[in-house]
Length: 224
Image (cartoon, rainbow, N blue to C red; front, side, top):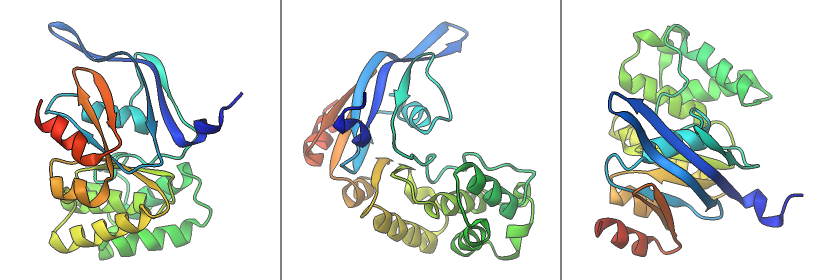
């Protein structure tokens, strides 16, 4: 039976994640259980190599734990600002249509046109993604995500998307989405963190700690 709070959290249940290396298994998480509340906009803070990107991939479902599971009844985006799921041999429009279908978009034509306009790709939208610059790929991936109404947006370094003008547009779109949805963000830019987030999760030594107060979380992270 579902409990009332189950619809507003993301549960990590006994999650173990490791990568096989020449020196053996490199563990990122060992038997980690944690509840991420989604009634907050949360910054994920941790030093380089702490496992922030791995955590994001686990939440997005693009990687799976070696043991345990991630449970939620919410619709989560893939990590916005990364060209995750973009196929080089397909055109921009074909990628958009594919992403729309797997995410249950009802009006694919409207979705395709919305993505094309937001990504500012012009005629390149009809060309294979392998002909795109890295910035164009990122703009396409961002537009595909922001044009879908997710419950939770996973944001990875939003300042890395496109030129200065596109970054401003991307930030504004995310701010508008965050009024009705939740944001979980990884960023090294504290200005972005303070702009989008009201709380923090600090990742250290394979453990997660939630701070309801963003400033307290930042202080703890900076003291590590």
